[in-house]
Image (cartoon, rainbow, N blue to C red; front, top):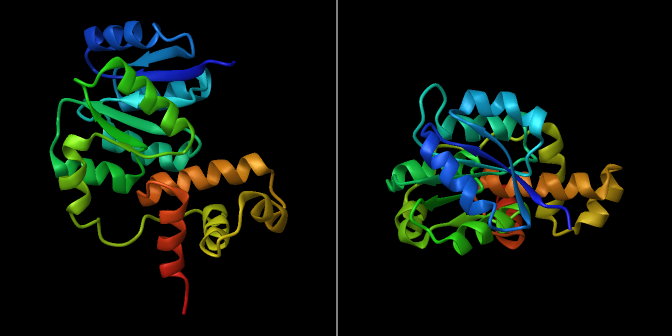
Length: 207
């Protein structure tokens, strides 16, 4: 099985090394790089081709929120899982609204962290239960995140309840492209699964 490729982004070298050691105890995960802030991570993504970015929320130059926003635009197929000691509900809500694949506190167990990485690779949304209720009860940012033309085309068909194979056929796209776009929509719109996503998109359809 091909290992999951992870890019670690944290301004503290000691924490980056610690995370690398923890993750590399799992044979199914490969750490392909480390970055000290979001701008460095953005420069590295095309070089190291990570499957997932594991990032701190608070960093100089470009923080976790900025990184999530840039990845949603420039690298929509690469989920960003935010790992931090900072558990402010508003920050979590902003990260999710921006398209983060999840949010975990740094004291999670190794098993929880590796399981979360696998979940976001599969297109899921991971949120630490200690902050989930307060974060999700907060109002979302005004307006829906802007979708690309390709994302909107897929979103319209997801709203109709069509499966990926039929969406791919209608839009003349590869099945994998549709799957990745749906994963991007889940992150951007902060939905935990495809059913919730379809319901939200259906509500947004013109009457």
